[in-house]
Length: 364
Image 1 (cartoon, helix red, strand yellow):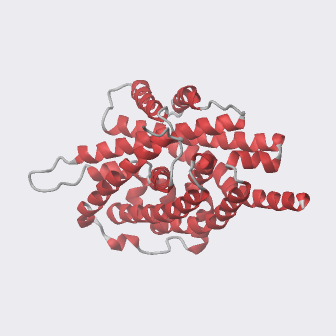
Image 2: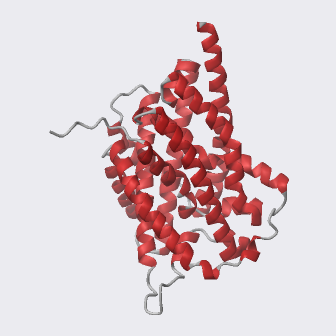
Image 3: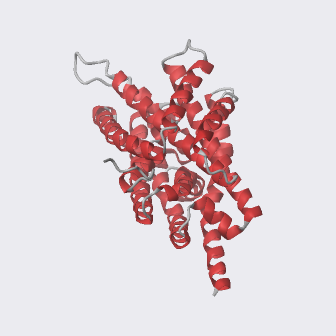
């Protein structure tokens, strides 16, 4: 007799989800945001930003361990209902914004490079529809799917990097410090938003089998993601130079179009595009599911999984608003989302830690 699933995931599934949500960023989006100010030193930003968020996230994990709750419940427990509602609703808006901008970025890439004659509404609706279907399978199913996708995607990425190595020019990485340490330090704070996904993922703590799985997955996931992001940025700079890479909207897809395995195997782009699309749709499904969970937690709705459908439709409608990829990438993602997210990542964990200490003293 089969045992009934509890709908929770373990360390391996959580780590796979972490890698899909964080490490996959530079496979799907433009490196322009990193390169614009840091220039040749842009590859250092993920590592420096990791140092910025390390202490806040450690405090957050400590608070979650002591309260035994997920992020949303902890906020309500420590901050009270009025303030807690504002904080949780803000977290929902950030998550929905991330899901919307990401999905629009994927559709823009498909439209520009592969389906220029297909109406954008149709491409977008099909993409979001598939993502909604996968998200409705549940958190445990998303975790298992991620554990299957990540090794395949990792192998594909490794193959692409090896095949493109002959085009790399290490000299393009110099000067190593770009515009200098002050510029790097400033931007490393702003790009702490790169790791905002972990903040959102802590809202799923109740869907993990133990706090140990959350802690171990968070630590390993952040380190691996930072290394992979730095490696990808370094590769983009070595191949395109930082001035060239700044103007390339989708470097991963562009890179896949320029490689070949042998003299008679020149059209291997389809393999990498297929992997790219697979990661894109699973990643969007994860975002939509987390958006539904956070919305349900904010408004105290127990049956939150059906909310994936209307929230997915809302994401689709909002995603149609940006006029072009430049508006999506530069104005909305960097100008709005990043600048709204990094203060929350750095300030919210210490505030919750202080509130928890104060509450413990009040009880004692």
